[in-house]
Length: 89
Image 1 (cartoon, one colour):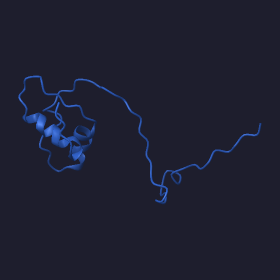
Image 2 (cartoon, one colour):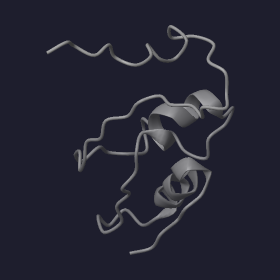
Image 3 (cartoon, rainbow, N blue to C red):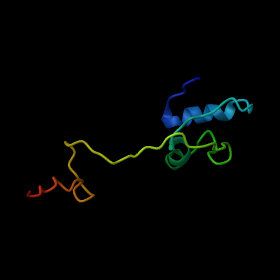
Image 4 (cartoon, rainbow, N blue to C red):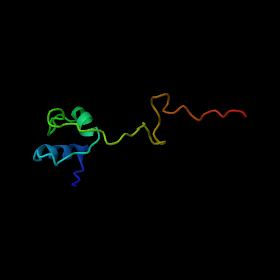
């Protein structure tokens, strides 16, 4: 196993396109090099649609937007609805 970190997975994806097509080289990546990078980079060193074959999903994770408390909110209803009201018992 070789780790190829950097550029949000684009370096590893580029390396994969230059590997021998013997079925022994796999890439485990998130959506960065395939779904996000084409919109952020003018020219990629690979074609995310034509040069890769999707095998399967290995994990699923929930994400949520967040910000530092020191940064003032601008949208999303001031970024927080505030504390929940307590119920009387």
